[in-house]
Length: 257
Ligand code: NI
Image 1 (cartoon, rainbow, N blue to C red):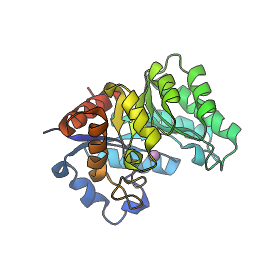
Image 2 (image 1 turned 135 degrees about the vertical axis):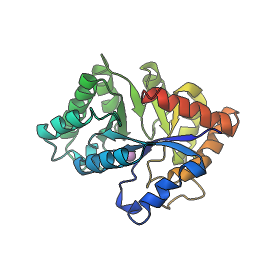
Image 3 (image 1 turned 120 degrees about the vertical axis):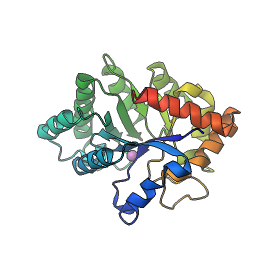
Image 4 (image 1 turned 90 degrees about the horizontal axis):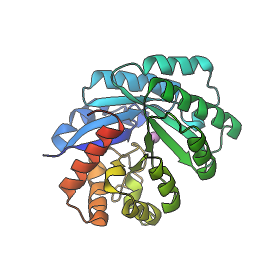
């Protein structure tokens, strides 16, 4: 049996307070083999670390999301750097630019994005990139900081084929989740059709972005089967092969092989 690898989840979110442990305990029996929990604030970096230490099949990423970096300090950077040495921490993220919410000054977002890219390079971990309505600035920074990077994933990919080509040329993976099943998910379907199968990884971003038929409800890794079915249809592959190949890709991304 092949097990699903969820490359991006937030199980420390308060939406899971009522049933977090039951839910995580039920993953294996429902075909979910590995989960990477993603930090998005200094607080969630700490809860991510705790979850990764509690569950053998849960790994973690440490980083501060652009919408949460307004109060970030160099001390935070040093904390992330020190704790990223933990063997269960597999990436720096999620980091990037968000001009959709735009609640932190753009220059401040850029400063901490670059600073977190730098520590990822220093410690040799891949990065998880969040980029929303900020295509040009993200690409510019990713290109200028590309030297000596250890790769990574463009999470919840929301741009078109042209932008996908730029990131694929730099050898990044593309994170695909619930949006693939949306009626208005045409752009992502085109990207999935275009991208080579060995560069696609599955992600939930749960509790957000539940796939159809659960759109608008709380998401979890258990719903990834709906994304898998859609990807299998687009790629002309079997469901088992999509699960196997995306899990192999995820292991390469996070260096778990
Ligand atoms: Ni996320």
